[in-house]
Amino acid sequence: MMVQSPLKRREVQPNLRKVPKPDISNTTASAKKQSNAKKASDFSTSSIPKIKPGTVILCSIIIGALGFAYLTHVFATQRLLEEVQDLENEFNKARQTHDELKLQYDRMVGPAEIYDKAQAAGFINGGPAEYVIEVEE
Image (cartoon, rainbow, N blue to C red):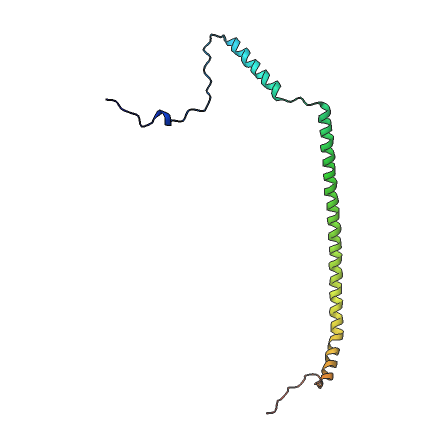
């Protein structure tokens, strides 16, 4: 009797990872160390790009100039903000003084204008209300 597996060989996905095959050759431990050292030295020299000192100095000068320009801008902005706040305080004081003087002027002029308009409209000045007003029916 023969039993078939439910997995068919053609439906199984192949292993995409590359697994290195073990090196079975008869090499000594020192040869392995030398090959590993050679690989490490090749890796370190090829991965680090060579930068010239002049490039580093030029980049440092450019970064320093940009930093100086930024700090100058920040301090100038703070100075302008202080000036704006001082002007705003001065404006608020002037507006408060204006409002107080306008209120005082309205108190001095307001009732006289109202009485003049009332007399022009035909109303009679009742005088001070020190007594009780009685209405006849």
